[in-house]
Amino acid sequence: MITYDFAHIDGSIYSYLYTCIKNDILSGILKPGEKLPSKRTFANNNGISTITIQNAYDQLISEGYVYTIPKKGYYVANIEGMTRSIPNADINYDIRIPIRESFEYDLSSNGVNPDNFPFSVWTKLSREVMSNKKKELMEISPTSGIRLLREAIANHLKSFRGMLVDPNQIIIGAGTEYLYGYIVQLLGNDKIYAIENPGYRKLVSIYKQRNISCKYAYMDDSGITVEGLKESKADVAHICPNHHFPTGITMPASRRYEVLAWANAAEGRYIIEDDYDSEFRLEGKPIPTLFSIDECEKVIYMNTFSKSLSPTIRISYMVLPVHLANEFYKTMSFYSCTVSNFEQYTLAEFIERGYFEKHINRMRLYYSKQRRRIIDKLEASQLKEVCEIQENDAGLHFLVRLDTNQTDEFVISKFKEKGVKVEALSDYYLTEEKEKQHLFIVNYSNLNEEKIDDAIKIIEETVSGFRRC
Image (tube, rainbow, N blue to C red; front, side, top):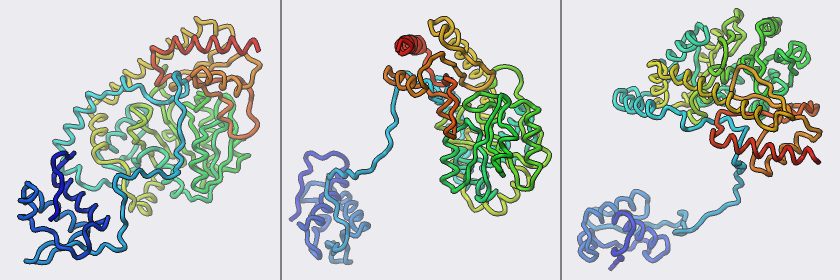
């Protein structure tokens, strides 16, 4: 007769009983074809209910460890050939996951301070969506995303960026990296893509992973140059005209028309306009987007909620020219939208009810004060004698030029030794000819206010140390 110790178990009795019988079958204690006790007998001998026995037997039957013969009982199945697991074994394969370094003071992080996320409003809207949109939440989202969110984005672009957009031109995706894949499929992977130099290195990795030929076009004080585009022989220019990362350059209107003229000069040329942090232009009105002044359907506009809300939201969108939108629906409508309905409806309500605009206004004020606070502290410190702050009126970072004879790599390594992470502009040059400008990036979107003074003090001491070298 099978008996088990039920005096000290962790979890449900049914789960414990199922595990005990399964382990006895796998270890050979219970042989193939051996009859198991009836539910009533098993229950009486172990002091548990027949329902518990039934649940354990049913689970074993569903997994193929036990079979039943009507009016005869339950029997152990022949499990020869089935995978036999070792109970409570620790499996540890040599899978090497990259480990990110952590620093006490990170001036390179583009994250968002959790204290600034509108958790209370988001929670309220999430509950309302769960209560009021049960049917919609269970429906399959269109390829391009739910219409309610696309309409909300279209209205936001009209009021904030002066863009007149049909909601059907908007394609929603889980991050811009995913949407780049759509673009490659729409335009073809035989095209040459030009990326700003210096520029965002991750773009190179993304495009090369998709077997795209990437070229690098140099910039001047007005942004990417037409000469650079021509030299690259590119078909597609991926640019950030409204606030370039990492230089912070905002492309003037005259250069925008020059770049558009380059795109119009040949069939099959396009511009990908990455407007990743346009909401945070701290002074003056935003300059019109390339998309809004494009009359020849050459611009693909891209934006994300990663900067305005949080990188973990993972909701981005692109606005396609009409002919590309039609091509998208014709050839790619079999794709499923990668953002859950739950998140889409919550974000749609957040935008439509005006919470997004209020959040942006609040964050713009917060970042403006944060920026001023850091700059004032730098100017009041001993670093004033050895550094020059290069300001611009957009985005969430600025550049600091350091007066030193040391290499950028040396400076960065010394800061790291003290727990401070910084990045140099030279790190973002995509070719070997790096300009040694000694320009360092200060990203303050996730910089804890309480740590600013400590970070500046450490930087002062570190700079003082290696300047004596």
